[in-house]
Image 1 (cartoon, rainbow, N blue to C red):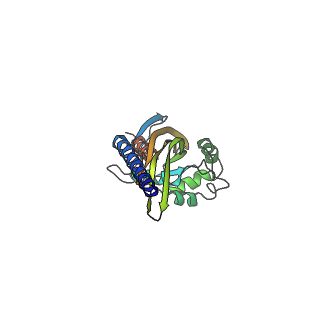
Image 2 (image 1 turned 135 degrees about the vertical axis):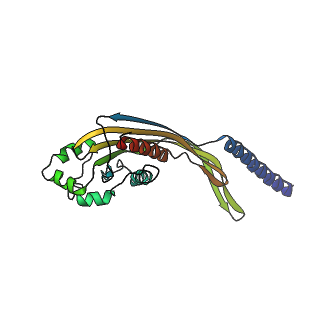
Image 3 (image 1 turned 60 degrees about the horizontal axis):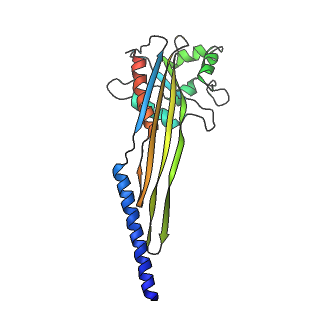
Length: 233
């Protein structure tokens, strides 16, 4: 009787795991992770970039959890510097070094409005002219998790292990580019990009991620609109 109880228990665990497998497999068959993107533009001045002119992309650096991720500005630079209509870019670090000390941590502007005040400081206009940069794209924004749920458990034993269950998280990526004409020291307009997507992590022995990547979607949308804006198309 004792042996029968053990075999029945093991069979029950096996059936339970098979049930979990079927549930997760069924869910995986219906899950897709994609991001929806909305891009808006507000043009205030006509723009255009000559062959000998360049642009610099600067991310808001407030040195806290609200600063713009460096990976996002790197993504913008990567897209804008290649393709059919590449834009000549001055690396962010090079521009900051050329503009010393105006963009150092203690003096760096914290918003697009602060740029206007910075440009009125004595000596700044001359340093901008020496840097030979026509446009500055000031990037503000971040990617945040707005919802998450589900459950997943992982076990390890001498007989093996695995993860079972499913979890999800919804993210919102919201970014805005303020474009400044460094020849006139005035703003040319703004472009905003918002992307939303839900990612999943399904446990079927090994965790299987299904990622929406709204940050990447916002980057692509903002970069292509920024290319069109700067070229004057």
